[in-house]
Length: 136
Image (tube, rainbow, N blue to C red; front, side, top):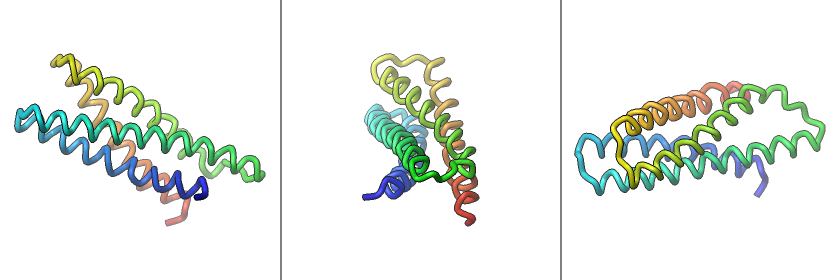
């Protein structure tokens, strides 16, 4: 499979799975059920992993484009957003792993704020930045 297809597929799932995880996290908070919270954590970690993989396949694709002497200039904003999102998904995965064992109200609040901002940035990046590159 070509790198750009892998990156595009991971990018799509890297948007959908974290969004699903956010809904499950909210469901866990509302229902106060530990099982829902554990399932939400698994979905969040899966989404973070996919988001991180999307970032790494994006780096591979960037090197592939450069080796073909294709200018990455049209992708500049996408590259910046992807780097920020990869970093945020890494931080979120570490925070969520920590929250499996140590529940702290302050940490949960920070986690939810960072997670919500990350999901919103991820949706924005996919819907506006990526579609503007493709001209759609």
